Every structure is written in structure tokens, then in C-alpha cells.
Image 1 (cartoon, one colour):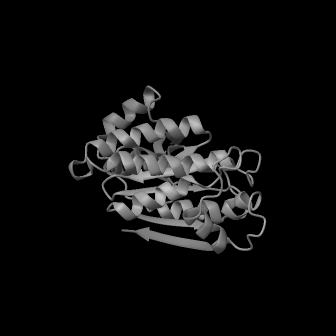
Image 2 (cartoon, helix red, strand yellow):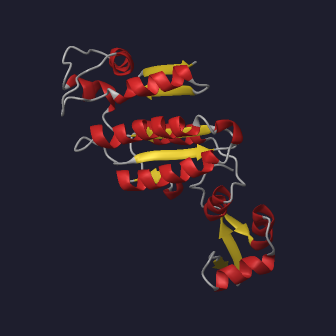
Length: 227
């Protein structure tokens, strides 16, 4: 059900049940172009992928964001992520980050911490754009998905990774594990343009001082941080 690239066609009656709306509503949406059907033998069918997009936007479909992002970044070759989760540039990312901030602000027990959560999300996402300029592996931009009910935020990119980024400054780095340790614990440089990776120390401090958990992966190295 969470395969949003599925091209399976669903009869109108089943589609209406899945979307929790009436058949008449689906017919009306088809006529005015709001939600288009596929015609076969004079009957209306709907793409499963379109139905799932609708359910995602309405918050009615539980999906595994991490698995989706992992599949995208692990593929040898792939396309851009589903539009709902794709930020092709930093402007789109910032716009979606503002939406996340608004949603988190409505959660009572996050009133004191949601600005920090937004800040570290922005720091990690901005790193993807700032550190990969001219060095994207194939598809530029980031996967950015969140589920406020499950308190989950997922960011991923197909960029060059921390090792290659920091190796331009610390040429003695040999592994993803070493680069990840340096990125989260050492001040690289305070001078532009060498001030790369320093924002992850801020992320680390926020994590260990608040009730937040971070799972971070780059290349073959993985890190889990929590207070």
C-alpha cells in the first residue's frame, strides 16, 4: 500500500471507499479535472499512485518515511522522489520547513522545543544544499518528509557525503566513520569558506540537551544520538 509508484488501476467504487468519499464526488472531481480518472470500456478507474498521494496529503495513509528515503538513496540509479517529499532547491526546502514549524507549534508538549527541532532540521537540510553545490551524485535536492503524529522527520540526499566534504579541509580523513565523528565533535574552522560541518555540533548539543533522538547515516557510517 505504501508503494507510491504503483500503476495499478482501482475501480471507482473501491477508490471511493479508500478515499472515504462518495462515488458522486469522484465523478464530479473527474469532470472538473480536480481528480482525473482513467477510462476503460466506458468505466472510470483510478491510479493507485494518485489515490495514495491524496491519502498522504489528507494524513490518511501511514507510510514508512525512513524506508522510502533509504530505498531512494540506496538505488544505483533513480528518479526524483515523489513530489510531496522532494525539495529540488533550498527555497522549496525553506518553504516546507516553515510548514513543519507551524504544525509542530500546535503540539502542546513541544511548545518549548519545537523551535529547536526546526532549527536542527534546517541545519541538516541546509548542509545538503550548501555542501553539495556542484557535487551532486546525480539528482540534486533532498527528500524531506515528516509525520507529526509519529514525531518523525526524515531527510536524505544523494550528495557526496560527509567524508568527501570534509576531505577538502582535513585531507587525512580515511573513512566515513572518522568523518562522521569529526563532523559532530570537532570545530573544523571558523573562517569562510572552510567553515564546513560546524553546524552539526549545534545539532549534537540540541539532541543531548532535549528529549530528541537523531539517527544519522553517511556512506557506511551510522550514528544514533539521544539525551
